[in-house]
Image (cartoon, rainbow, N blue to C red; front, side, top):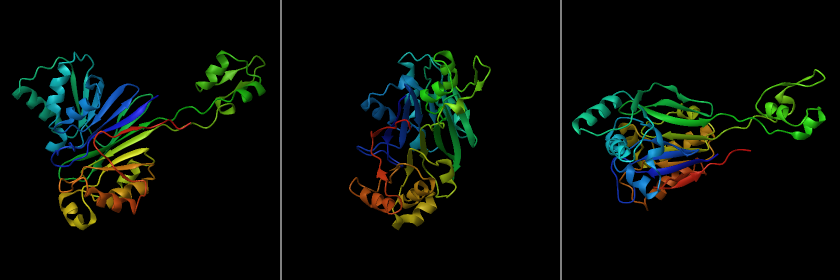
Amino acid sequence: MNFEVFVLGTSGMMPLPGRFLTSAIVRREGELFLFDCGEGTQISLKMLNIKWKKISAIFISHMHADHVTGLPGMLMLSSQVDREDPLVIYGPARLHEYINQTRKLLDMYINYEIIVKTIEPGTIVENDEFTVEAFRLDHTKPCFGYTMREKSRPGMFHPDKAIELGVPRGPLWSALQHGQSVVLADGRTIGPAEIMGEPRGGRTFSYVTDTLYSEKIAKHVTSADLLLCEGMFDESLVESAREKKHMTARQAAMIARDAQVASMGLMHYSPRYTDRDLKVLLQEAREVFPPAFLARDRMAFDIPLKD
């Protein structure tokens, strides 16, 4: 089961040559989930040869232009590839209005269903395999972070224990592997816990951008395999960050450390930093959280299962 994360852009406020606006996409079992859609998001998708037809859901953090102005083009493009499945777009209030008004003003040809869902904090997507949680951030407009978390899988099946307990091979083994108790010919009931190992955790991706620092964010991204988190400024500009309701790289690292994430990539860089200048952000983040790294446009991460 694949779980891949692609960084589509890392710039805040405005796109730069080689640094597009902040967004990311998850590919899980062939299904795509897009997080934010600023101007030019399509370009990175094309460069990565990712088929946008397979995007089943888009999660918008907030209604600032650098996070939503790529949506009209994406919606029109999807009509050119004979999309049949509905597209679900999650985000804050006014997202529905923005999409509807843009469609009317541009007389957009859309030949598939678009479902816009205004979100509140909590679980906004849940199925048998994973959940997506939205949580409030503190920005100049209503803003949300997102965590996509796979559900736990059954533990390892131990054939030797099954044989020892007298469970015959075949359908009874399969039932135990699927979490069902079985009754043997001699009347004994055998439960999965007697033969299966401890449940195995799934994989987790978190996306946090455009917010004041808050220690509360950590609980929403706990134990993430990969956290993409804004680190817009260095510590010399901490007052500017506070005024504009953004975070420094050091503050992003504090969240990663407190949440005990496996890996944290900085993103949403201020355009004041050249690629060479970004090393200052990295240095400050690593003083707090050594595994921190600078996310770069079109980086790809394959997150393996924990066996």
